[in-house]
Length: 441
Ligand code: SAH
Ligand code: SF4
Ligand code: F3S
Image (tube, rainbow, N blue to C red; front, side, top):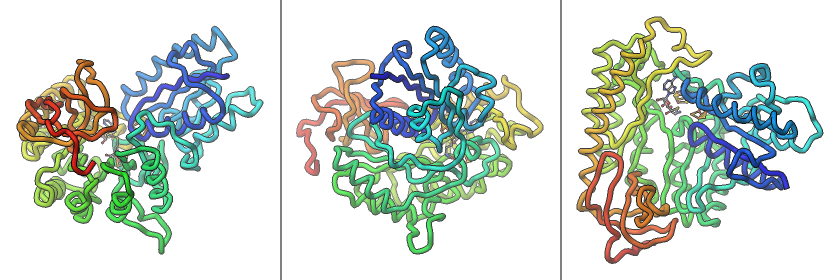
């Protein structure tokens, strides 16, 4: 039996694509191994969102080169966004790579492996969604469902539109059928994935158009789905029907990830985000009004070209005002082929680093304050397994997407109740509730 090793970088899209790759390799009779040294097929699913992502991956490739030199029979394959962004150049820079493919070409890996081809092959068309490939899920009780591929936005800093192509929505019927299969297979939490999920459906043919809010309702209605999440919505397309769904659909969790990027209208314009600070804060006000206890999280970029101290402070103001439950913060990284990479006034590293430190301080302070509201409450937790820091305790997540470490007894995949005793910016801690089972579960 042939053995493979797959390393995944990047976002949930890539993690999900990797599940599809693994499912496909299983069906070809390959077995997954833990150590790269033991593999006949060494695979990477790459990301190129920031320079640091590129560097991390290229470090790993060095090891693949050594292993290939030890045993030239080994096959080295590179898939994903980095691969797509460099295309055939991957073979010039790394001649030991046998096969390279973009995110839309996962099934081509199977073709390559089952052919007698001895020459290096690259597959970079935006062609197919790998929906027909069986996924191999990391956790039995959690499933991802990709509702669209690609992105039609033109955010000036972002490489994704060039690595994932134009936006294509999958028909709602296919998605519901996939969710039903997952539910029948024991999945209790479903996360819908797309680069701009609330643009979902606009490209579907007339007559079968379904809005994102309608899709949420259709998935909520599937028996067995206890929790429904999605990522990411775009503030420009965040409409009241979607916010309202959080109040009305029982499975839809009280958490909205609403990427801010910058709190300055001038910078947002240069980023081509197509909303301004006012419109963003308006969306937040709507969420607070309709779903008062909703967790709000975000993505923020500091040090965009030309960002002034005053503009950066506007971002800090939004962080103070919104009081995010958590935020992913990034230093602007110029990406090949993007508009922002060629803008004048690129900021120096020390300036970017200094702003990042101040941003992180504000984010953490606010998140810490915000999470105190859970102390003393009894929250529903989806159990994931033992705690990472203390194996005698359990770990899980709340509907608000907070990690919880707690004392108690429960199986992974079980929904239980936890009395929260303390909270940091990142995690809650507590004890399983005395009458631990849920009436509804
Ligand atoms: N489509 C999603 C996610 C895009 S990538 C969305 O629009 O929300 C995830 C995050 O990476 C982005 O939200 C952004 O904050 C960050 N990011 C993207 N390109 C970047 C760059 N060139 N430099 C720094 N951060 C970047
Ligand atoms: Fe990138 Fe913007 Fe599309 Fe998100 S919405 S993937 S940031 S271009
Ligand atoms: Fe995701 Fe990285 Fe591609 S964040 S979409 S894997 S560039």
